Image 1 (cartoon, one colour):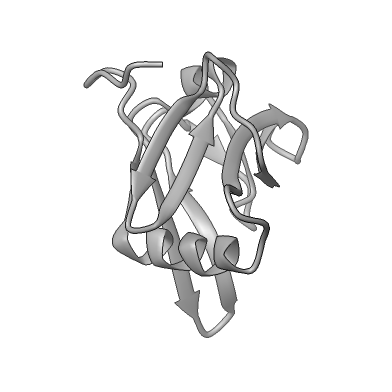
Image 2 (cartoon, one colour):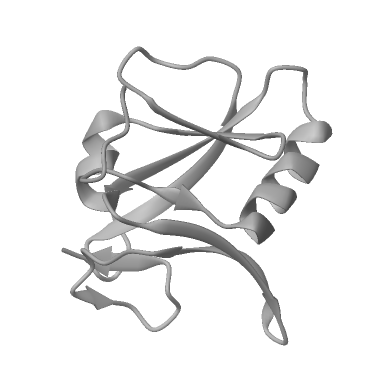
Length: 113
């Protein structure tokens, strides 16, 4: 899938570094798939999977040794988002800064558009 300004999803330098570290311990050619599925206390939640194949309709983001895939359905909910990695006092986690989210849960793992 071709990325346009309307559906642009970015990966921060911190996230790319962490994804590359995770993928380096997986089989050669592994990629991180980020998707949106129903669930969580706000209706939608992000899902992260290490995969070894991509679909024809995937948005492919490559940065600093990290390959991230987002399917076309999930992209509708994630357009304009930034995938980041945070390491703070309460722990380490990937966070998606999503401008389409109008509400989220307290723990930050689910959202509403």
